[in-house]
Image 1 (tube, rainbow, N blue to C red):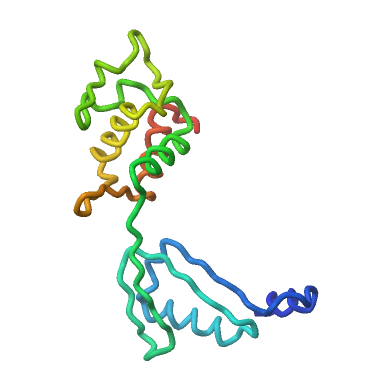
Image 2 (cartoon, one colour):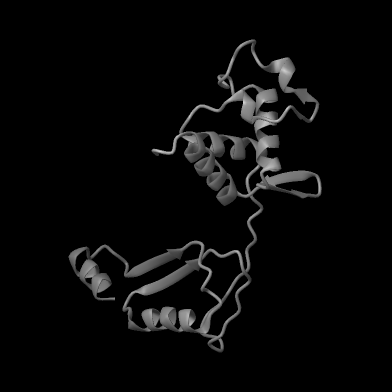
Length: 169
């Protein structure tokens, strides 16, 4: 709160509002955590808003002190999951890592002769193989007609795959 007041004095154009974003907040449902956030809000002279990201459902343990709004996030569509995985991989993707088939695509049919690295991942058939690789690793879930990918699991898989081949990273 002291930092907030100092900043507001230095920058009069500041409106005195703060946004606190906490992701992967597993403690959000605990009374002691909510009490600490409540104390922080009470001590702050700024208008403090808190956004919590959690995989658990959260209920108010302080008798109406907070308003909780459940907003489920669907996940990433196939295109975005493949891009995220490749951006986080930090190394070339090898053909041997991909599954043999996915949605009517055969790796043997599309893999260039003698190629070890996947060079043209923008090809639709290659993306299907990569998506199947992510699904096989438990990164996806099906919701009626659509498949969604958990971004956290996609990143964890990419980090793990990077360390498997390049332990010095």
